[in-house]
Amino acid sequence: MTETMPDFELRPLKDSDRSEYALLVHSSFNSWYWRKGWCNDYFRCPPEDAAIFYDIYNDLTPASSVAAIDRKTGVIMGACFYHPREYHVSLGIMSVHPSFCGLGVGKALVNYIIDFARQKGYKSIRLVGSAINMDSFSLYNKSGFVPQKTYHDMVIQVPAGGISGTVPGIERVRDARVDDAHAMGEIEFEVSGIKRLQDYLYLVENRRGLFGVKVLENPEGRLDGFMGSIKHPALNMIGPGVARTEEGAAALIRASLQRFRNESVLTVVPMDCLKLVSRMYAWKARNVETHLCQVWGEFKPFNGVSIPSFLPETG
Ligand SMILES: CC(C)(COP(=O)(O)OP(=O)(O)OC[C@H]1O[C@@H](n2cnc3c(N)ncnc32)[C@H](O)[C@@H]1OP(=O)(O)O)[C@@H](O)C(=O)NCCC(=O)NCCS
Image (tube, rainbow, N blue to C red; front, side):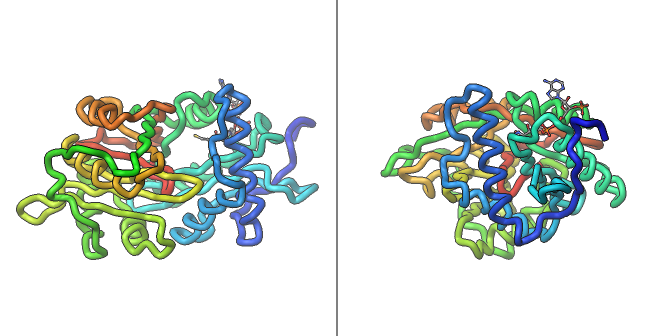
């Protein structure tokens, strides 16, 4: 270790870290975006609400996190979750405390997750990372991640009366049921080469009361897509979801928007889906950021529309 390099150990987050972790995520993102001239808080909720990331990830895959702990003070310097699934590992949410940025903490966390994936024989790690955040972009790029897809982060302020007008196919959208989970896995695998049964079941069962899930059924009774959404003070977001077509994705998003009357909601939309993007603009979407699907290892181009989410992280 050099003099400037902090002395830390890596270990999973524990329940007793929950409050400190919430402060870490909140201050890491808010201070990064203020420092870089965003002139706005990234998280507009009170810091303790950011504990929802800890809560949901621990519901889904307990202890699948890595934290860098200062050996002298016991302070959490940075932390990241990782999500081993059927065919891939996804990475997120990554945060380093503003007092410890630029000292190699982020790199140590990413290396830990890459080592985990290698040891378990995974052929790919995916994440959705900001395209305007050069600190995280460079961190992932230098660690071997390759940008494979570009996304608009589009925010819609949904009027109190909901979005007016309709879209083709919306009559085929219905609420998801637990027995849809298997078909959700089949279609996600077909579109984006991944599967995560535990995530679909978790979203549909919705024990915390935060999620909505819609499916798009075709006349033969098979699924042409699904779309999750989360409504929480730390994050209102539509996704994760996939659809065979842009029209299908628009129907699923349109139906999901109705959950967010009188609120604003983020959807991350593939830039090459021009019809879907223009539909989002017609619903008065505002571009707030851009993201990249970053992949370490194997990747097959998507075969349809994939709408990522940050909670749970899609990858
Ligand atoms: C992004 C973040 C996690 C990085 O963590 P960190 O501990 O500061 O990162 P590190 O010190 O390990 O540096 C990572 C690497 O990126 C490199 N890097 C950073 N900016 C760079 C740039 N503009 N060009 C080239 N390399 C750059 C560093 O030199 C380092 O590489 P090296 O180890 O080979 O020298 C941290 O800034 C953070 O928490 N930001 C706020 C939250 C956030 O943005 N999360 C990710 C959302 S997508």
